[in-house]
Length: 312
Image (cartoon, rainbow, N blue to C red):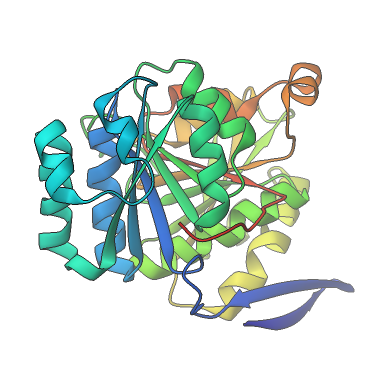
């Protein structure tokens, strides 16, 4: 179910759709791609997220053709998995011990990892994958996934001195893709009790500027257009849930480079994905893939067009 809130600012109307708790299997499920490079980092992030949100967790393992696990594709019996792949069986057991047996499922698929994970993404509300070696699998999964994808890399040293450390950071440019990212980022921040930082990258600014509700009035002469954009995009959400602390930042430089800087020490960096498929990305550049490959924190890439399929 959804509830719609309407706000007006300077004569314009802004809609905020709030998603209430869903009761379908897909609406309460997240998936983690496990096994392979970076899979265990994805598992750890996904287990913690499921524990805090109450989501059902689907562990998705893609085996190569000819693997002993290939005959167990679908919903395998854990006792049989333990004989063939003990580490995989132990990972499932640990997740079930932490979350409860009914909340953790294992699905095994065979074939191309990127294709299989993209297909599976239609059956969950969030897909978590490891950064691995930044190879083609991550890029192709991001290109074709039907739900938001979080890319997790090995734990990095916290950048406590970063201005946005500890925040959920979201890139905003006034586009529909950015608004989709804002919805995801604000929901994540509200669920986890984290502050949110809304970032706009300006091609006019020659420096980085950071604002909160106190400093905003004293610095309003700097980057007025950027400030108006950030105010318009964040105000409906702060009115909806004032408990979420929101900071605003105007950054200089390339879009990808500025967002990567903003991700230092961030809880999560969220970017919207405007384009689908290889052709559009080649023509317009690829900020989501660049950020996912280089940011020093977990990155959520949120597609504008999301498709629901059969629950996993």
